[in-house]
Length: 209
Ligand code: PRP
Ligand code: URA
Image (cartoon, rainbow, N blue to C red; front, side):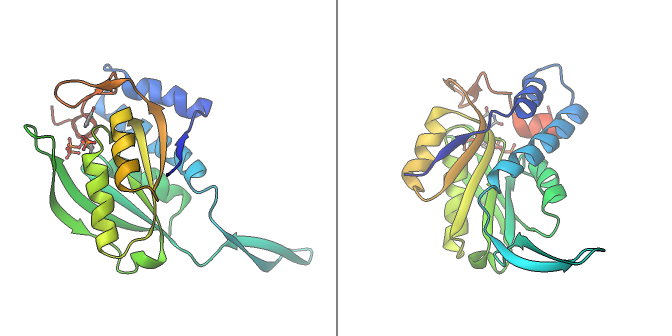
């Protein structure tokens, strides 16, 4: 069974409060999601392997360490996952970025894939899948499956807010994928929104409602 890591760092929790607030406008919402993604990436990358190397300081040779050859790929589930890419790239500027377009059918709540463009060498990369909301878990599970179908193997999932139902779905369908979240909320409402959540992440990021 995969691990669920709740990132309860005070900075993350503080910023999440303003992300949830319905009075936060799109500009502030985007900035806050970007900042929280950066802070969460610090934790998500905690166990990347390091390899030994040497550098010359102005004083002399220094044995030190760098992140080993296993490069990182960040994959956004569209649309809302786009809001988390910039923050991660500030920490890992050489990461390759993939996009999977999925929307939830409003009637069935089932994910519908409309786009997929991934780095060619995903099989060699440590992959971080990002989407702010893990509600039923259908979108994340389908996105992860699309990555596995194209050769991706070492995958972790990073979301801002999860419902227990979404965590259970991903754990059942992808027991090899660890899940990193800033909050686990109570439940889903009849429209499949996380309660209390933050509303529609895509609409709040891009001002479409
Ligand atoms: C939202 C969100 C997730 C999905 C979560 O996307 O960004 O991708 O819903 O719901 P689930 O866990 O029940 O699948 P949405 O379908 O609203 O598309 P959008 O990002 O394009 O607005
Ligand atoms: N998608 C969202 O944007 N918010 C939710 O609460 C659930 C799915």
